Image 1 (tube, rainbow, N blue to C red):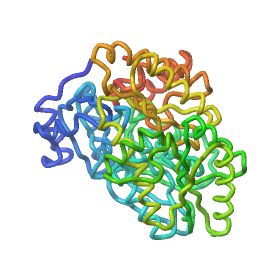
Image 2: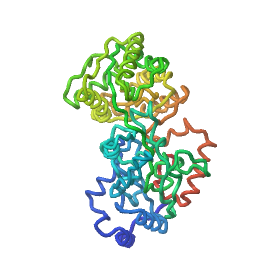
Image 3: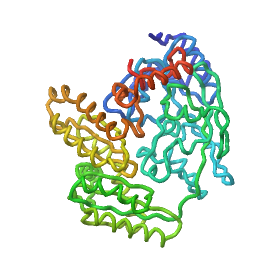
Image 4: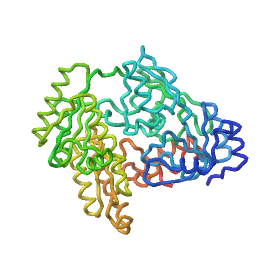
Length: 465
């Protein structure tokens, strides 16, 4: 299908990016063979670290000439296997693209390279009282380019939207090595096809992003955080839609069941309020006026109490807020440390979330496997972690695939889809047919062929082989 990387090709790569930025040693190959997706490992044949768009273009032209697969890589924090070099080839690491080129305070815009770490960009914006809301759990290590490739979300998506909502324009390199600019640095743009949004969420299968133009918001001056405890996960999930029906849009609304909090406690070595509760909501509101936030919290407290909450804990200061957010942000890694696992990124209309969670628990009981649910309840995005735990090997191997398929079928039947923010990548491609009809998938494949006729761009992702 693809050709192997030869010593001659490696020599040509070194002539493009210089010797010190081409790696074939065993340690590098191992390090770049995996991301954060389960225990998958696929070694690349060579790792190349270009510095600028022209070098990326030359590498792609070379790969296309010799029919070598190219896998773009950001921070390596992906959860669907988007950065796995399934067919070997060239791992194109964007880690040297780490410049914040401009933060335009007058127009609330920024120009950045894709290797900038999300949290670093956010903090630079905040120094200027500007706000870039998308905040995936891995924001301390993930790259902005990877956020675009997967259309990442995070807790603040419930009020502020996801990555795609902040991208005005892009520079990217096609599979032929052509450098393309999309969009414009304007808030309105009805000029031709929206190629910017086509590239976002395409998981590196259509091109390599080399420059990003963001829009920004004013930084909210104040925020308040509460932790709400329930005696049942159903009461917890059912109260979410009621908060919005009361006219409140929180800046974050996260759900954690007891087993998720237990895992986080072990990970952090700390106790948290009401950790005996069956489920809890972490709710944040933000804005510029203390009085308005107090009224929002009062209204939320009234709604959740009526919905069955037995206690509400207010974070008194920024340190307490940080502690509660540390609890939420560490859950993903904490749960994964328990045993072999599969993580599903289900999303449904928020009012249908109780039915989703109830169904997930019933399906997992039927197939004799353990599940832990947590996630962005405010937008119906439930991360379903399926754990091998004490399940024997034979039962796990026999039941895991039909259980996942049944969970996804339930998700779609509730008006949802199989990935809210992690992407399809390698780990979910065999289930895409549950959410996407054949004619829709064929159209996507046709788009892929237009952008990448030889199929060298991140092959083995999104679509079944």
